[in-house]
Length: 113
Image 1 (cartoon, rainbow, N blue to C red):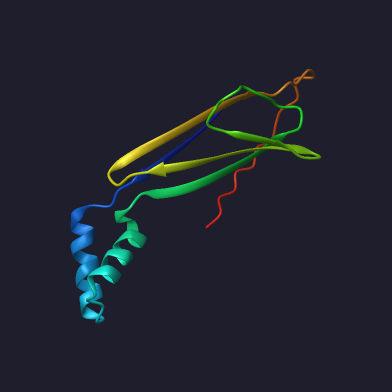
Image 2 (cartoon, rainbow, N blue to C red):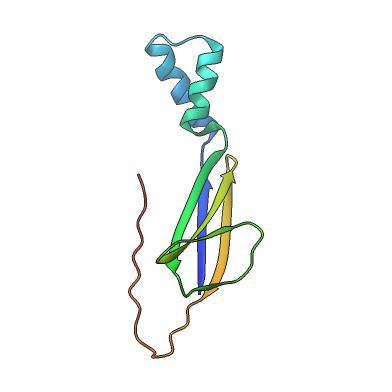
């Protein structure tokens, strides 16, 4: 099985112009504070942390970009992604899931806000 994550950072210069106008309109004119707000709104790199839980029996294909932690009933695969503005980052890892009885699987995908 393959699990992939794709992150796009689509902050454009037009977005910066709009944010600067809003900040000016509400009285934020200090250049340091304006730059800080632009970074928060997406001008800087987008940093994401991904955590995937797989069954304890999963056989994870070694990958230097992931960390695998074994828990009581599952394994936790985690990794960080950093995407620069106007770029896209794709991260992939693979694992095998033994199913000797050929029973169908149920998958659940949850995303934190």
